[in-house]
Length: 290
Length: 257
Image (cartoon, rainbow over all chains, first blue to last red; front, side, top):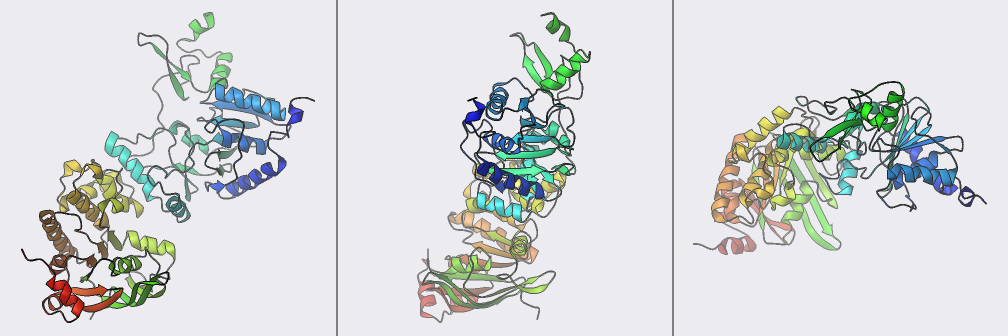
């Protein structure tokens, strides 16, 4: 018996997948609304993407091609282990290319390459409740969502400006979905917020908190701001040192103990594809020689 | 005579079999300050919480003169409307400032919360109004970014008042606003409250066990005992010529310095 034969397709049993799909459909029908679901124990710790994994498992079909990214990279521990998990339990094809994939599970980034219709982007969400840190009572935040009382969200942004002179929230930046629900877009950098109005389907799974929410394609997603402090998708003022891109989200990497540093695209697939197409950044030559 | 701002009819609140407060009837007119006094456990806080929508009474009506629809029973109105009233036309000053403030948010954010809750999205305006209100409650502008935890008890209480009054409410509920403050701070707070109430033409309901507070602030007085109103009337009249035995006891037990 093959190893994948010992598991039901994509690890979860059919009843569980059915339950998750119902939650996903409800989430898609009410964009931005947090749907409770009976999150299962997964064979990995909370914080490693148990919510995203369950959503991916419920979405996968044998024909799918899966891509898993962690902070934009395909080759980090979290991405590798989840990719292997689905290779073993579902036997689906995997890829590192955004364009070749049909389902992408992500932690903390949206791929630089725009998604097309039919692709699914699954987010791993640690804390689905955007109001949590300012209003700890769950009963109260649920009521605030129900009645669309979102003034408190701006109190957080006010505090940012009062303390730092600008909205310093740089990730998990709250968004308003279709003018109704305020949603935590998971800890993606606010640079990615404008990309959330996309052609693909976006699904959010929070395993520990047992919540699922979703954005259908082309949903209007507006980042909250003040009239005199408009939303600013912040980006490091550098081109990528590997591929020379000037419109991507960059990681800062310290390369020696003398203050040397380089900036590289956090989306490894995008960067690799650009270099394959002949683009070169400041440090690309030395890397190619090595 | 103008219509009452608040009419309370036959209000009953039970905790199981035990009476919280019962058979309460009164009218509150615009610009009027009503004091509710009584000993601990007499039902005065229960009554206030019923009026403010924090507790659901078993029987009775609380009619509030809304801006758009006239007299509406706040007990039967929809929850969104009641919550909207609670952050626009009503204000609630808690005995402990900690219950009414967000302790992990700066003073400016605390005052600005109500403005943002009613849709103000201009940081400059919000901040200017917050500083203006801090000034009105005698907190200097350089404390606007400090958290309430860095404030003294009296300042916290004044901050709570600023936070509540910033949207220009018409009715203020106060639950022992001077409790836990020392006498000199109390005196300043009362002075401030009296000024604000007169200046803004506020109606207020003040629950207290401190007769000095109602003497200073309240136009009318209700005395409660065991959940019932035993005496009501003009403040000076009730305090100077108490009719009910319990009121006589209450007035005579005030310590004279």
